[in-house]
Length: 140
Image (cartoon, rainbow, N blue to C red):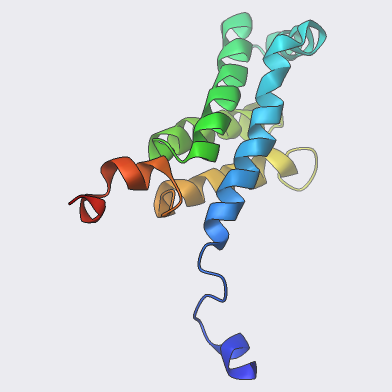
């Protein structure tokens, strides 16, 4: 057991898949705020205050990206493309809306940014639609 703990080999090889699904659920939850008029009004006001162009459009685009991207992450469909969109979304939140405060209020968006970057680099894994649809080794 100690040898396994000290080795660089993974103990649970499918851990990243579990993290992808949980992260997808979390970001989908935030995406559902698109249906909450008060939250969206607050987001538009916040984007207006920081002088982001087209605040109404940007607020709805961000929440739609979270909702659709989260569902696609859960399924593992177009994971790398979705991860790029979500990295951009979290970068805007972290560096423009939270002014780069990764040690304070910008902590969660920055951690999500790092997770989405991980999914871009590592892919969806075997338990995904990406694997079923696009992995050439999986085809007969």
